[in-house]
Amino acid sequence: MAFLKNIPANELPDKELVNLYRTSRNMEVLAVLFQRYMDLLYGVCLKYLKQPETAKDAVMQIFEELVAKLPKHEVENFKSWLYTLAKNYCLMQLRTPKNLKTTEFNADSMQLEEEMHLNGIQLKEENLQKLERCLETLSLEQKKTVELFYLQNKCYKEIAEVTGIEWNKVRSFIQNGRRNLKICMEKGSALPIHERS
Image 1 (cartoon, rainbow, N blue to C red):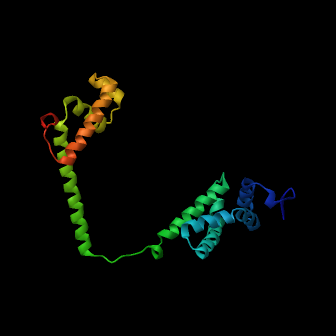
Image 2: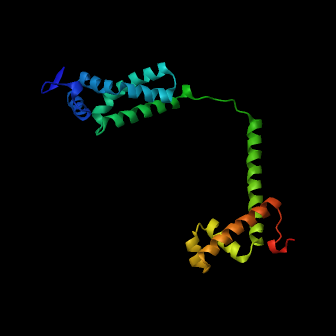
Image 3: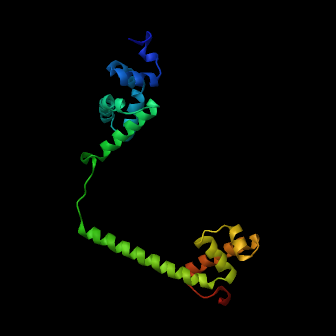
């Protein structure tokens, strides 16, 4: 099988074979290219489709797609292009209706989920209110540095510049503030730290 200057096609690089197929539409050239990566294709298909027989069928389907698609695309790296083609083919197979599992609609579970969702929102709201109350229990420096660090995403250096507090003290205020907030949140108490006995 000689295609270019009596060089067997199986010795030509991918790019030359791609160009040769695109100009000649010679199926033997495409077969050489395809066979180089058949194991790769099978591996990709098996990874996504899980069943050996389904994966083998997919490899053959991808070859048929290749016949039509390769002439339409500028392919620089055939191996990675083919890998992407195979992956997309498998993903499309997994999305087809025969692969989608349906479940019976259950109004009771829907209502339960809605209640759980509303309870979750209510709990979040309560926690936010508790956090706001607990923030008020911190010393002025702790409150300011914690708000800048957690709510405004400022780093220690920026906080030091904004507040005029030394970097080491900023770090200490944030750590102590965070610890005091945690204690306050766990106790559910909103008494200022200095008023607790």
